[in-house]
Amino acid sequence: MHDERVPGTAAGSPEARILDLLLPYHRTTATAPALLGEPGEYPEQLARIRRFTSAGEPVLFTLPGFPCKSPNPAKVLGHLPDEGERLSLAFLDRLCSRVGEIYGPGARMLICSDGHIFGDLINVPDAHIDAYGDALRTMIRRAGLRHLDTFDLRQVYGDLPYDEKRARAAEAYAPGLAALRTLTRTDEETTRLYRGITRFLVEDSVGHTGSRSALQRDCRARAYGVIARSRAWGDLVAARHPRSVRLSIHPQRPGAAKFGIRLLESADAWATPWHSTVLRRRDGRAQLMRRADAARLGRLVLRDGRPSHYAER
Image 1 (spheres, rainbow, N blue to C red):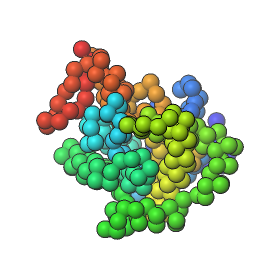
Image 2: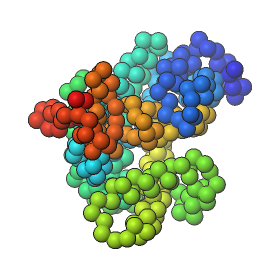
Image 3: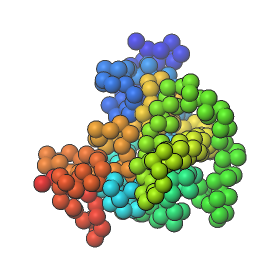
Image 4: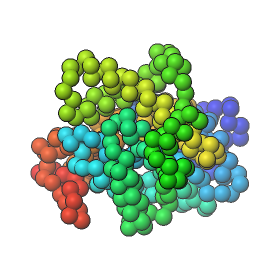
């Protein structure tokens, strides 16, 4: 049954068929595929896709993500992109290609790397974030992923110091701390995001020498900062690309303004290539998991002389 807020949407319309391609990969808080619904239950995405299809233009997706690798060596192989990013980029490019098979003008994906916006809060050096982003672009170019482009703070504020770039973005777009705290108490999705980011920060606080309770307090405070800056980045991207179809690597409920997208298989709905390592199963499946777990199950595989992933024994 189609949502009445999307008049004229038919199952065979270009926007409905494009959304149908995305639905199997929806990263959502729903617990069963049946709860993903049908295209008409996603009025925001249908309306945004229609802005392009009605004009006969390529659909533009914006995806904040691919920030940098986790600083926790128990999770990842290093600070540069590896098999997880390679497979995820290929998936996104293939998804855009499939849009082109059902809608002539096709689609483009703008990967909006958000590492610099909160790098200081997650204790990742800006130099590592730059190296990650540069390697990501090299990966896209070498693989011939012609539907993908990248965007980061360097394209917004040029050569300013990163602390100043972060401050400018936050001043212009970040929500206030009091409002964010209230939202965390009252909105289920924000509460889930806050808890998920706090968990990541605790896990990634490598070398912490204080008490567990002090670490928890510090990570809870930093989690508010990460969410505020992430929202600032999302709003900055939206201001630069106001017509785009907004995707997210975080789980999103059906009908939300953003559409959560799952890049690779994982038992954890929050897992991403930059917080995990790929284990290539014997049947060919690629699964994200902690590096320590992948190392117990597989053998290390190198690509271009660098650690890439594990292959199941």
